[in-house]
Length: 405
Image (cartoon, rainbow, N blue to C red; front, side):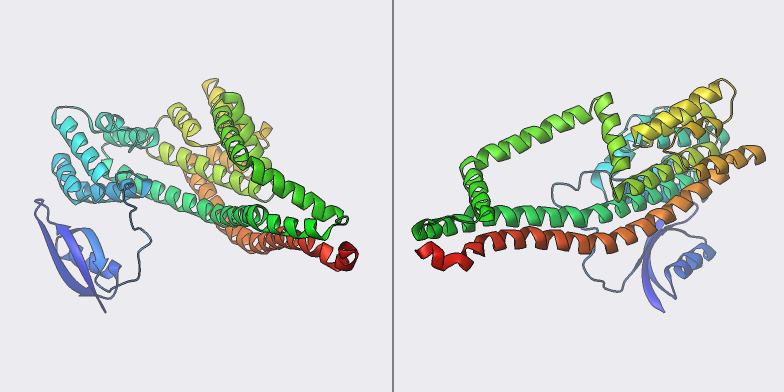
């Protein structure tokens, strides 16, 4: 039995805050519903360790997918409970913790009050609500199922957040270790190697080739270090500008898919994102051509975008969804077959959801495998770099007697 603090509404929009005892968070929600209250927020009063969601000062005004997903779920709950949209938006504005998102909801409420449709009001804030979000809400408005599409949006956004976090967890460790190796190597070359150079110059004699090469690299780095930093910055800047072009973005996305170890992970992420986005749009009642257009914009990989473009062109000509994907190697045969079965059975959205769930599980397994594979590999690389430098430095010590002569 635990203690839970809650915030809830009744069917008239009145709110209250209180504490109740329940076996779990789900049991607390069920108890509130039995009493005729709509739970908005449930938190255990048990003290926990440091939260991983602490906001960094100066960054709390950003709107992220997690905040939008939580707000969407709360809005869906209130509309499902019978609250008018205007009242629900007012409550949402008051209870949203993210100040930037709260202001956005307030602006949306003002536009709706002025006579704008809900989807049109959302479309004015693309930083918070992307084209996927607006299209699904517009379809929900047309079909009179705003609460269900908002709930579906919340599920989709939460899964996107989870997928993004998995990618970050897979990339963070190698990047941190790579940065550590770079800093450690630079420190050795800039501060430690020059000390040995003065010692070896006093001894005289000819140094081994690895030691001479190391000393030359150290001298060049120490002399031109600012230029190296400047050149690196210029290369990064030019690289980012090139990637922002159509040709550069295509080449960059194609390269990511071919990178050893990580390429397959990027492909699975793209398949999951494509399938879930298209499935969510079609299930919400968005026309298939519009759904394909939005999917193309949100899939995040130019090679996969080209595949979706081909599907869009084929559908305009009356062809199937699955057939055009056969000529794109980036799309696995399993995806094409599942889509074809979905077209035959009239359950394309269901099949796409199954494909997305499958690739989410695949991403989980790949991330776990990468973690176990990359850790020892990076340790070996780090040891080889640092060990090679140390061996090159101390190699002349084995010939110290000859050097003294």
